[in-house]
Structure formats: C-alpha cells, structure tokens
Image (tube, rainbow, N blue to C red; front, side, top):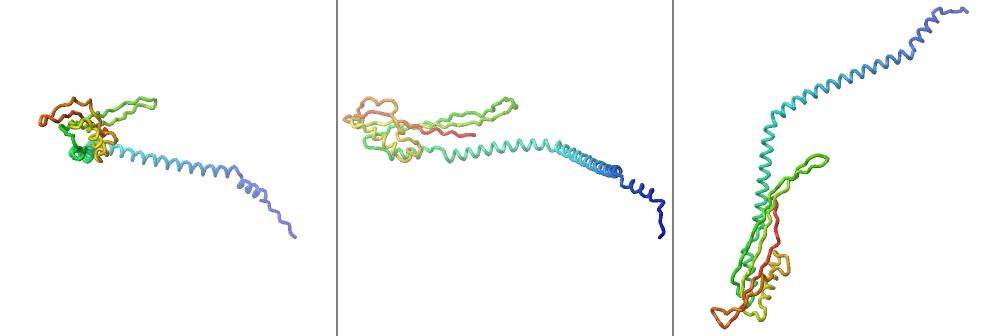
Length: 229
C-alpha cells in the first residue's frame, strides 16, 4: 500500500489556525458594533436637526399668532365676566324678595282689635369689592383673587294699635304673623316678629273717645342673603 505524504499539511494547519483566530473575530464584531453605533448616532443627529427645524417653524408661527391670542384671551375673559353678571342677575331676579307676597301674608294674619297703621320695608345691600391678594412663600409669589360680594339685608316693620291692651291682643297678632306659612318659610324662625322698643301710653281714639288703644311696633329681620360676583 503506497504511503502518501502531504507536504502542505503544516501550511494548511497554520492557515486553518489563522482563520480560527478569536482576536480577528473580535475585531470584526467590534467593527460591526462601532458601525451600528455610528449609524445610530447619525440617525439621532438627523432627528435632532429635523426637530430643530420644526421648533423654529413653530416659534415663528407663535410669534405671528401671539398678538391675536392675547386679543382672544382678553375677549374671552370679558365674555366670562359678562356671562357671570348675566347669571347673577338671573339668579337675583328669580330669587329676590317680593314685597307683594309679604303684604298679602300680612293681611291674612290680622286679628280682631288690632289696627295696622304703617308698614315699612327696609332693604339694603352691603357691597364688598373684589380684590387680589399677593402671597409670598418659599416656592414663589402667587396671586389669589377674592371675589366681590353683595349682602342683602331686609327688615319689615309694622306699626299698629292694640284696642284690647288689657288682654295683650298684640301678642296674638305677633303669634298670627309668626305662624303664617309665608313668614315661617322666609324668616326661618318660630319667633320671627319681635316687639321693637316698648308699648306706648294709652291714648283715646279720636273717632270714638270711649275706646283706648296703645301703640306698638313689630319688626322682623329676614336672613341675610350673600351673593358672589
């Protein structure tokens, strides 16, 4: 059997080892990773450049639109204030105190031997203007707006004569007023009418000198109504 001798075996072995060299593989892999990183950085730079162009365009657009926006904001604030005024006026018109109803309830609360001589109504408003309060803290300065208010005060006064003072008829008149459904609903108290001052001295009736009477006054204060702007 012939013997075959490969004279190139050593060179082939060396070439095979050279091909399997891990350092060379690492260099190829590292070069590939660097190339990927460079491509990624290039993409990021391109995105930044595009976003910069978009930002510049938007800033230019905002510079053009800002004056118009300020005008619109001012008009919107004015519209909101007017809408608030209209809403408050509507609420006031539908919830205001009606004196006709009070007078109607009064005529249904009269008792015998009591003569009403005067009925007075006092209606006043206490106005508090709005103000802005500046608060300074560690986090900075802030401004808080305090809304204005309108407080309604209503008082009803009744001057009358008691022709049966010996029986304290005026107390029955007071109880009749306080038990009236209208006054109970609006005055919110069981003893809503109270004697103002003291009773007057007995006097003779000019139309009938045989009758005496004493004068007295009753007053009722409705609960305050506070409305905000």
